[in-house]
Image (cartoon, rainbow, N blue to C red; front, side):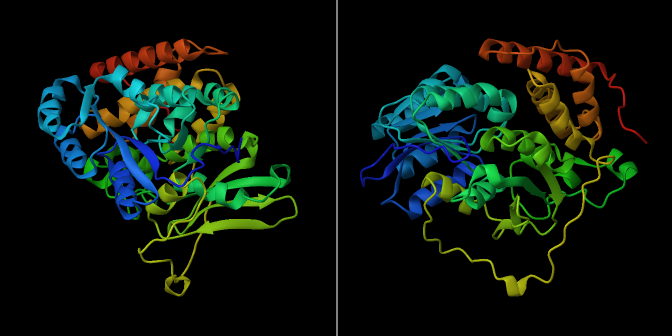
Length: 405
């Protein structure tokens, strides 16, 4: 699956893109790329969660054939603003999923946050659309299901995460059987040098102050707990078909090497670049083609040092959840993701401590039924049950500690 590509869109007309999550960080950068390459791309469908004002502004600029808002309470504002322009509008989760199947779409860029990206991605694969995947939770929650669906679909899957884009770039032209390890780099986040005692009292503002990347709130908190690396390890297992014990994280604070591939002969290939998501986004949108960019290129002469250290699993126990989820399989990763989404939201609302995000995940894992071979309905039921349990635990204020001091 690592180099699974599509024969879709073989003519020279612009590739028509559905941007799922157009008002978020990845979505807005995607639209920047589309506007810079009008001969290559066209924004055909724009989808947002709640930010109807920005969706209206984007639709006026890019003139998609359809604009969809997930929050149905915002629909009237969207419809009234765009009807004079002849832009079709829709609202709700069902409309989002249905929009991904429209015949005029070539590629779906999934940039929504969390579990909400799963259903529309499944719809797009069933319709044979190419997928530029920025929503890592799709493969974290249901990697086995998505892998089997892709094997039976003409869809191509192109990772947008900088780490997985780097690995894909390193694997092009290589024999996957000759891979020894995938090495996923991590910045270490804003708490890389904090003690566990300091992390227990960390503020929301501290957690949102990422040293290298400008991202949305949820992924920035995931970086602070380093559960984003756990998720990326799980995602890499499904993207590249590599055994879990051959996927390892390393802390690289400069975020210049985005990931590496080690081969059986000892050679290591690395992909380097500035910490700018536009590179992996454009590489995915163009289906592994390299597009001209006027953004500053990496200058190695400006790099005083590139450092690498082993991650600290005691301070960042969320990292250990990757091996636990992959070893146990089934619906385990779905439970982890659901509890994490509740925990991050509760921390951002200042209802729980930073370290309680991990505690809540472990607590939820201990109380949700395990399903060894889940189908889509099982994933939906698991997510609902885990979210309900985690929310009740937060509301009750009774979250035990699972840290090993």
